[in-house]
Length: 494
Image (tube, rainbow, N blue to C red; front, top):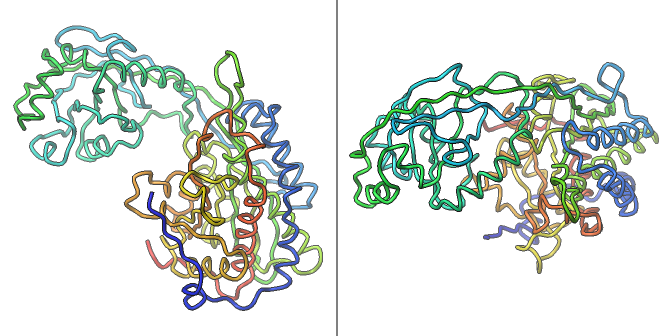
């Protein structure tokens, strides 16, 4: 993976703050490895059961965070409380029926459904074949209001498949993704079966799109009355448009059930610019426990995102102490740990739809999601952090961020994931996105993807606490500068 580091003399010449602020350093020193470890050992313990959204462990974690905010003396901003109720709905296994001219297809044998759409009874669609869904292939076809089948590239994501996205943009009603092998279909079906029922939404209304139907190559006979080999030959011979359309009958009925969860908010009122709000976020939920079986079942989420959450707690402690000693921030700060990130950025989405403080008054969002580890790309590098989004909406914020790092923390900034063309699209995959889409400048701090990501092995003993402390200090000094500067950070891009 290509790296982009910006540090050293170039920074000193291009981005300069004033000399280090001894008052900022006084309170930055309150961020300690011992406090980070103590809090993370609680938050990412087995007792929290993986903190899955809406489950007992997540509610226990929320109680721990709320008690911490209360002990600090933060203002409970949600009608006198620290909890913002988040109204969620789970989607139990939907009822799905699929019929072709060759007869009914069996769910989990011939096809698997992935999505939250609904048909309100059986609906018939013309089914056409679009090869691999390339621009060239789609250009030869009218996909509007039709069901479209494509061969899915190996290891392609069902959720973020560019071909599927393009077909939907052009009006396809449903997409059938055919795997390259039957074994791949079986494997993906198993994953979807385990995940379905864990899908959560902010609404109990079905999606306006039907979602994706997954099929194995053996199902091509039932879908088109021809073999997978012949369909693949049509791709090779550039005769995709010659494949005879079929008729497909689809019936999907969703089953929604209410689920209760909460964001946890603590507010520190500022001074002369108290109506302007700096929002510092992390997500405190994780993915819960594996199905019953032998071995370690608990996904502790020490790095994802226990590390970011305990960093937020430490920043809150430092800023509260500064205010108690008459050196509090000019702008107000909202410390917010959100739920449901792992289920689709739901807690932050809910907050931006139901803000406790007007979004127009929100100056910036600093989002911390995984800052406790080193990824394989940096095993031999200097202390680093991935910085994402700082320049997407505000050049001013980007310059400030660089200057703070040069003045205080001197981490190697890696902008790899900030590239708009990066296939992982990390900019859209954590809670800052819900602020960014409302044109609020953001910075997302991230350590990368490591071998324990979303596994029970993401444990506290794998955390590099010195590095976690250094990254948390970076966020603190950045927040300190934003909260105390004369001018408000402004968005100059959209």
